[in-house]
Length: 85
Length: 485
Image 1 (cartoon, rainbow over the protein chains, first blue to last red):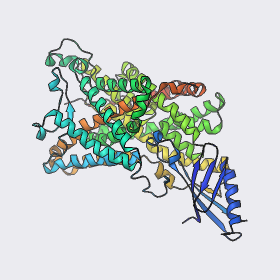
Image 2: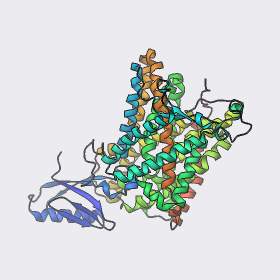
Image 3: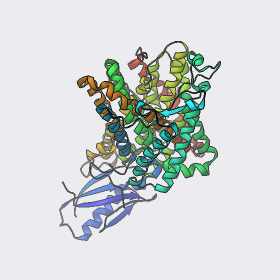
Image 4: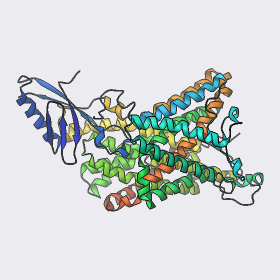
C-alpha cells in the first residue's frame, strides 16, 4: 500500500527531523514528532477530517558516520498512521 | 541527496555489504570458468615460504608460471584497485582519498605478507631441514597476520595523522566480508571431502548460536540495568553490541528501539576498540588452553569476538597458531576448519540479528512507545538488516558442493580457479583486514568511557566468554578437524 505521505527522517544531534518538499517537522522525541506531524498535516487541509493518513518515514542513513556504515547499513523506517482531527 | 532503504534493492550499489558480494562474486565467476579449461585468475600473486627472497613470490596459476612475480603483483594491484575503486565510487567515498589509502594499505599488506613468510618466522620444525634452517619461531601463516596487525596498530595509535589519511580505504568489514564470500568456495571444496563434518558443524553452530543468544542478551541487559544503572535505551544497545554482533547489532538494536543515533555511535566506538582487545588476547589464550578441542575454540571465538573483521581475523590467527602447535607434535590438520567454525558461528549470529531487531522493535512499539495501532514495523526491516554478504558465502559454497555432487568430472578443473580465489585472494583480503582494523583502532578513544568500558570488560570476560566456552563445548566437543592429505 502506498503511503499518503513520504518523509525522510534524520537526527541533528538534538532533534528528530521529518521532511519532504512540502513539510518539515522537528522534535526532541519521536512521540512529540508524531504529535507535531498530526497537527501540521491537519492544518494543511490536504486531507478531510476523519481521513486515516499513513506516513512513511525513511531514516536517512547518511546521518550515520561514514566509518560505521561498513558494519551495518540500515537504521529504521517507520510507518505511522493517524486520523486527521 | 539522502540514503533511505526504501525498496528491497536499496543499497545494492551503495553499501559495503553488497559490494562484498559483487567483489566476491566477480572473482568467483572468473575462478569458476576454469571448468572450461581457461584459468582467468592464475595471474594472482601468492607468497611462499622463503629463505631466498626470490622464492617468496610467484603467480598462483600454473598457466601463468612464466609470468614474472613482480608483474603478477602489479596485475593483482591493478585488478583489485579497479574493482575496489569502482566500489568506492558507487559508495560515494572520496575516490582520490580512497585510491591513496588503498595503495598504501595494499603495499603494507604485501610487505607484511612477504616478510611473514620468511622461513624463520613461518616454517614449523618438521620443515626446518627442508629450508636449511636450524631454528625458527614456527608461527605458520600467523606470522604474516600478526605482523600486518602490528603495523596497522602502530599506524593507528602512534601516527594518527597518517592513519587519518588512510581512513577512506581502511574498511576491514568490507574486506573481510569479501574474504568470507571467497571462504564459501573453500568450505564448498572442503565439503566435497567431508560433507558429514561440514553439515554437523553448520547445524551444531546454529544451535549453539541460538542457545548463546538466549543467554547472553538478557544477562548482559540485566547487569547493565541493575548493577551499572544504565537507562533502558543505553542498556539495550550496549547489550546487543556486547553480546550479539558488535557494531552491527548495536545499530540494529538502536534502530529497533528508535534510539538517538548518538547512542549506537558511542557504543560502536567502544566495540571497535574492544574487538581489538579480543583479537589480541583470545587466540593465544584459546591456543594455550583449548588446542585439544580446536572446533570448540573456533566456535567460542565466533560467539565472543564482536565484529566480523575481528572474529575472522582472530579465527585465522588461532587456526595458524593451533595448526603450528599441532604440526610441531606431528599432527597436521587440514587448513580451514577452525576458521570455518569461527566464521560459521558468526554468520549465524549476523543472520539472527535482523530477526532479533524485528522482535525487539515490535516489543518496543507495543510495550514502551505504547502505540501499537499507530506505529507499524514493516517486515522489510528484516531484509534491510540481513547481512547480504552471507548470500554470496552460501551461494559460492552451494555451487562448489553442487559441482561435487552433479559434475564430479569437473571437480579437478574447478579446483584450478577455486584454488586461487579461496587461497591467495582470500588470504589477501584477510591481510587487508588485519592492516585496516589496526589502522582504525585508536585505543585512546577509551578515554572518558570509564563506566561503559568497565561494563564492557565485565560483560566480556565474566559473562560472554565463559558462556560461549560452555555452549561451544556442549555442541562441538569431540569434533576434530579432518587431517590433511
